[in-house]
Each structure stands twice: as C-alpha cells, then as structure tokens.
Image 1 (spheres, rainbow, N blue to C red):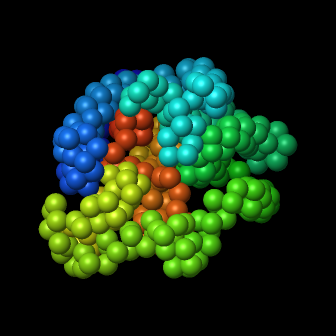
Image 2 (cartoon, rainbow, N blue to C red; image 1 turned 90 degrees about the vertical axis):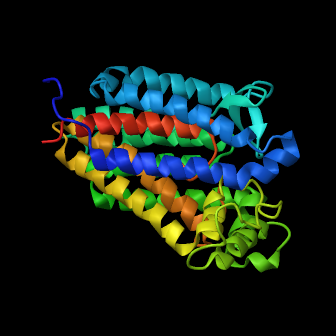
Length: 365
C-alpha cells in the first residue's frame, strides 16, 4: 500500500482537542474540593490528568503517523496479551480492587486497567479476522460463531472482576464491527435475545445489580442507598438551567455527588455550564463520531473500514451509556465519559485509538 500523502482529518483533530481541553478544565473544577480534602492539594487530580493527557497525546501522534495496517500484523499477539492480563487481574493478591471491582494492575495509586486495553485489542483483532473472512461472515457456524466465542470469553473474564460497564462497551463496539462486516441481522437478532436472557441472569445473580435496576426505575425507593447517585446527579443538572451556575460554582461537588471527576463529571459540567455547555460537548462528540464514520466509509480496504468502525463504536457506545446514566435514562454503571472524565488507562487508550483512526483518515478515498 502506498504511503499516505494527505493530512489527517482536521475536523476530527479539532473536536478531539476541544473535548480534551474541556475535560481537563472540568476535572479540575469537579475534583478541586475533593482533592484538597483528601490530599491537601486541590490540583492533585488535574496534575495527574495532564500527565495522562500528555502521554496520550504522544501516543496519538505516534499512531497517527504509523500506517494503520501494521496493527493487523500484531492483532493476534495483542489479543493474547490482553487475555493474559484479564486472567492475571482476577487473581487475589495480584489484582487491585477499586470501586468494588478487581480490575486494576499496579502499585499504589498508579495502575492500568486491562479491560480498557481489551476493548481496543478486540476491535483490532475482529477487524483483521472479518476482513479476511468476508465471504464467510454470513454463515452462522463458520463466520459468526468464532468471533462471538472470543467476544464471549473476554466478556466473561471482565465480568469476573466484575465490570459490566466496560464489558458492555466492548460488546457494543464489537457487535457493530461484526454487523458492518456483513453478518446477517437475523443471526444477530436471535443472539441478542439469548444475550438479553443472559444479562437478566447476571442481574439476578448479583443483588447490587438488581438494586441498580430498581433504583433506576424509582431512585426515591432508596434515596440514601442504590438511588443516591442518580438523585444527586439530577440535583446537579436541574439547577444548571440554560447557562449554568458558572465555572467552578458547582454545589454537588461538595461531597454530595460521589467521585464527581469520573463517572458523573457530565453532571458537574451541566450544573456549571448549563444546557448550552452540555449540548456543546454532545455536539463535539457527534462531530467526532460523524467524521469517524466518514473515515470508515472512505477507508481504502476492509480492515481499515472495520477498524475505524470499531474505534468509533467504542467512543459512541461509551458516550451513550455515560450520558444516559447521568440524566437518568439508564441504570448506574461504572462508565467514564471519553476524553472528559478523570482516568489514566481510559484516557491514554482512547487517544491511542483515535490516533489510529486519524491515520486511517489519511488514506480516505
């Protein structure tokens, strides 16, 4: 394949830069009170976020300038390494428990989350596999079952942590890749029915998940327990109104809304910047997704098209779930808002993936 001659998608770069800048500002605003209370340094979280952002931007620049088809060569090894990390992380004494899930590897406050790596590794491998087997993907046994088996195994290991939110994002993005590759909708619909039954079983098997469902339906049944986060999130969004209370003026970040710099950062953003600020962030994500899908359609080969689709799927599904949870349209899950929420593994991996997407855009027809 000839060397890329065109520049990467400027609209995509602009939207990434603006979302990331807004995220850094909001991490500081949302976390300053908590950071000062816990560490005596109101800049504690934002300094770490700036470090992760710098690492992520460096990785994005590297992947943006590295021909994307090289990932096809390393797809199998990358997937095997991620499976190994998922096995290691669930071993007691090795994996670190945070937020009730044994999903981290690391020392002290620094660590990596293998499930984040698996999201990207899975879409890269599926893009390679399905690009090579396009003629078989319409066949249930030979074309559809092998990728679904890998996806099911990865999802099962992630659920042993347990981390339903990350598993849901990985499955959503992967199924989008499988569908775009040519899988029959009737096959996917029948499997979706089985998947919903399995999801219902997972919910019933864990009391805390069932509590989240009942709290989603009526958070006021348990306002100080399972419904607490949903209620406090809405208490943040409501007073924000059209233009917000002003940057830095959130009330809910004063120990009312737990971990405001991570899963519920959009609540603080809406409280401080109002409907206009929240809508602007959503618009930036829509621009990013639009340009990403345009890149997928214009990619010069099937691998590039499917890989672009998977990366856009990761972003889109994660945004949909996070904002859906924050505004009360979905049950509470531990999902961060891409490029905005505080988090090292998530931010670095997303920027790395977006660099790959930008590289594909350089080959657009």
